[in-house]
Length: 380
Length: 224
Ligand SMILES: Nc1ncnc2c1ncn2[C@@H]1O[C@H](COP(=O)(O)OP(=O)(O)OP(=O)(O)O)[C@@H](O)[C@H]1O
Ligand SMILES: [Mg+2]
Image 1: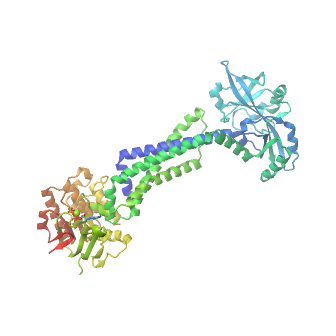
Image 2: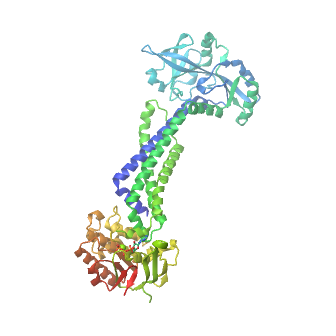
Image 3: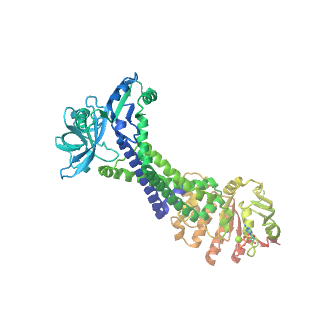
């Protein structure tokens, strides 16, 4: 009976087009919302995810990666003292103001790392290498910051205010696609270099994070427990906990997650309503014919199959068009600075959600057919 | 040999208590192969109700329906579709063709439904349309067919799967009188050529000449 399903579906072109537009819009909106959400969360946790550390130690009551406050750096000794700690490193997160060519200023997020071991260093380099920041006022910025800062060329000098004073830095490298959640341009520099500036603002003996690598990552929970007992003025996380904390902050505390998910759910529901409406209208129009099929010996299940396969075929085609739209617009959106995270699992999940909603939307039609008495076909 | 279809003392009672109506009241009749039986009677006399019971679409309140000697009125609800599929073809007053299928596809649909040989379904459907003289119009959609052509398509569909019985309710009611006559003649020819047993419900006086036998219903009872 797939034959009948396909014939009727494609015969009623206007209805089919409306259905497909509904599903396509639904697919595009859902994929867009979820992929942007994931992209933004990916940005928010990028440094944590791309730093090869099992433990993160931050200031007390930290809400997310971006809101680190300085604390005494000597606490690193207590971390290094633990037998399971392979190494521990300091990472500074701070803020500065870049001077633009047009005289304006732009806020920047500074990440200061140790270029000797590259812990916390930019990981996707387009020009230069992460170790180039060593030994001077050298910085690495990201290609995506060009939107805010204008063209970035290696070798150019940048004025940046840190604390009260303005310093001159040489751009020695460019990374590709490293963004912060806040979309503020990232500036990478060497930890020691930053400390010479920090000295002047009174942060000389401070750090923002201590990150540690364990000899056995499976012991992370135990080490975190031990550190929590000794470093009572800090918050201590495993890597996953810190990612979770950061994601939860942006998702729940800011209400952003709710907004994204409501939009995604609405998109799915609207798509479902359009499909359900189209299939129901089609079923109602064909009720007499379905009754005739029943009279001619068709089982209910055979007619359900016609309706359900129409819903499934519509879902598959509409979804496919939606995916094509997403793939075609992806480049443009990324170009304009939107972070998008698409993965096979996301595509598959959204497909099954769309399919499920389309199938559920056929429910009223199926019920109508179940209650259809073939005796009615004799009515004139 | 048992008749193609036999009803014994069938009744259909609608409603309860005061409102009880016997739409069909103890009707017995038999229908043989190659026979065209005409059922006549005033409006509301129970013709459609009787035909529905003969066609295993409606279960009688009491009495028996036998198809090819087999008692079918006792079968459970879920067995009836199969009985209809194998033994029966229907023709309706308002044609009931799928508007999104061409004439030949409407016939093909029922061939598929009845599980006919999957090969050359199109050719089989064309063969059936040929028997009702519609080959030239085979690829038109119902909206482009005349009433008579629609009803002939419905005949071809009723013949699909070669069921021994064809039941028609007012097949000429929506047709002009000339077309109605042609259609009835076609039915009679089909009965004789392909050894079908055909029961027609009709008000149409022309039907009387073309039927082999006529019975009258009044208030659900067969009139002698
Ligand atoms: N589902 C039902 N519920 C209650 N009464 C019914 C039902 N179906 C039919 N009847 C009644 O049974 C009687 C016979 O109806 P039926 O449709 O069989 O008549 P008919 O001879 O086919 O009439 P017509 O020539 O108008 O088609 C009528 O009085 C009708 O009102
Ligand atoms: Mg009637």
